[in-house]
Length: 116
Image 1 (cartoon, rainbow, N blue to C red):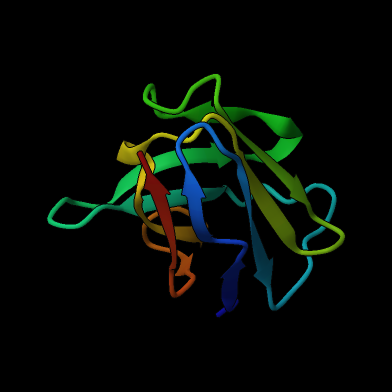
Image 2 (image 1 turned 180 degrees about the vertical axis):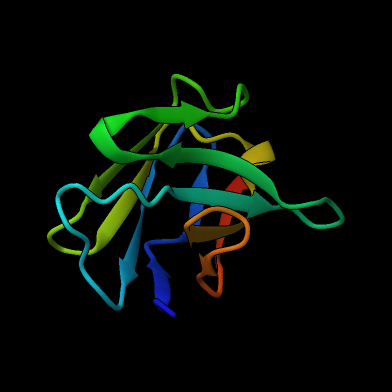
């Protein structure tokens, strides 16, 4: 199974920006239909979908991040990204990258902390 690894998390003040990167242990063809996404789990809460992208660049976002977060992918590099702008304290969570939906592969998660 493909292995995933996140990078780019950390601490930022409210209103700041971070870009998360997910690197896969394999590349994907230009016609890959694998859904790739980002989820997050805040302390004491269930894991939720933040953003996802499928082939042909179709994307979807949670309403709480729409307009602030942008997901993109590079199949040739086996990577996808989550650009996060105007971060809010409620965005604080462990962020997980995912390939293939909830039943697919997961990264180990990376902490994002937004201070007010």
